[in-house]
Length: 116
Image (cartoon, rainbow, N blue to C red; front, side, top):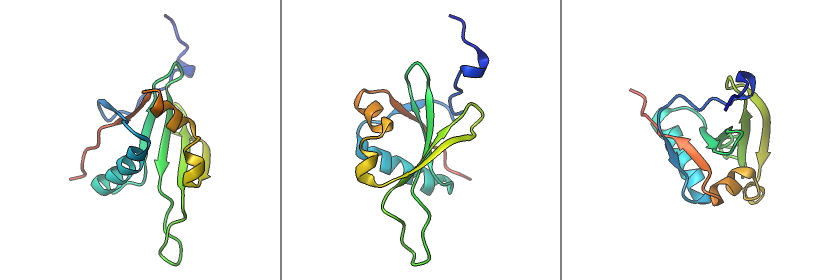
C-alpha cells in the first residue's frame, strides 16, 4: 500500500514501543521519563491508521513551588513540531483521546533510556 511521505507519521526514534496498560500508568510513565532522563514529558503513540504522536508533561512549578492540577498535552507533527497544545485538569484528561486509545489497547510509548 502506498502512502504519501507528507502524511506518514514518524514513530519516536527511541526503540521499541511498550503498551500502556492502564490510564493511571500514563502519570507513572511521564514521571519515569522525567526522573531517568531529566527531560520534561514523555511521548505516546496512538497506533491507529494515523499514528498520532503526543507528548504529555506535568506543568512546571509556579512561584509558590506547586504545580497546577493537570497535564500539558502536545500533539506533535511529523518532525516533532507542536501542532496543538492543551492544558487539561485531570478530570478532563480522562476524556482525552489518549485515554480512549489506552482503553482500546492502542496506546504505546517508547522505552526510556537513562541519561549517562
